Amino acid sequence: MFQLMKPTLLKLFLIIVAVIVIVAGVTFAGIQSGRKSLVSEVEEEAPVIEQAEEVTVKEKKKWQDGWVKLDGEIYEYNKNILTFLIMGTDQHGVNTAQSGGLDGGQADVLSLLVLDPDKKRIEFIPINRNTMVDVDVYDASGNITKSVKAQIAVQHGVGNGMEESCEYQVKTVSNLFYQLPIHGYVAMNMEGVVPLSKAVGGVDVTLPNDFDAGNKKYKAGETVHLEGADVMTFVRERDHEVGGADRRLERQKVYMKALISQMIKQIKENPVSVTSIFKAVSKYVTTDISTNEMVYLATLASGYRYDGKSMHTIQGETVKGEQFDEFYCDEDALKKLVIEVFYEKVEE
Image 1 (cartoon, rainbow, N blue to C red):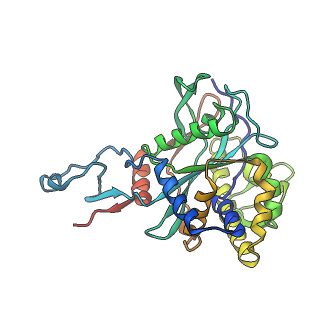
Image 2: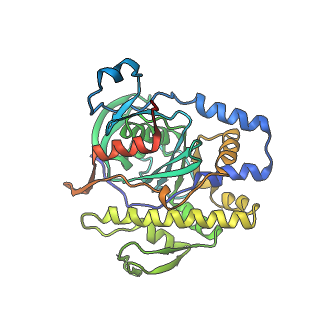
Image 3: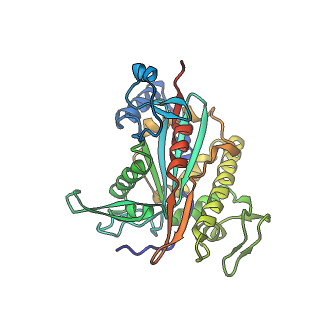
């Protein structure tokens, strides 16, 4: 049904976009309206997680909609959390609307960015682009005509390559995470990776696995400096045997950590540099985050922690499909991850 295109790369880090507005100057009113608009645009209903454990008679007396029981403990969705979908698409050139159909380009890099005001942490949940889900197909009026089982990256292609495609992708990712509220999105196409890496002066990464990219050969444990076209090779290409996409995902996670660290370092040394960083990639970016929302996010995230524990992994299995690799989530592990990141324990 769908032909998968070559995988692409890690895309924009949301906070960099937000800090631009801080550099330009902000107002208190803008901060407050940013929070209000982010929350008002999303139904703050708890994810719909099937109850796997029996609820006792005592627990039923105080039970509330949206609660979930895991390992004998009761949890509720944390409505203070803000969640964003970061997408990297395999389109070329500056962002322009496509004709629709299947021309929107695939979202080969997908990651949830989570801002937790209670723990004051930034969390990332990278999503395997080969995750098998129900992909919706739409007609010209935006009505669903059918759903097919396919890799989650395909969903972005069923649209115009810009806002329409992003909205379709957000819905599908939300469904994968049990109808998780997603407050906004940022997408950047593959052409942006070279100017982005150049703007931050490149990054140093330690290889998580051996990687043969033809003219580039990397060894596990080796530390290399990536800049320009080398970044494209590192995060885009993959071995074509079963599991090659999984190893590529590990490299993307390593690159993401290094990129964020380099950005934070550079901005601390020279706050104005964020303007040139965003200017270098802005024409490759599609987002539904308004200026006031960016202001709020930048102020919110400025004091948050980001460390080695901030990057989560979705457990599952990769198998060889009829044509392409297929990744199937471990549902029990996914539920535990969602509860760990997005829920808080109900106190007695």
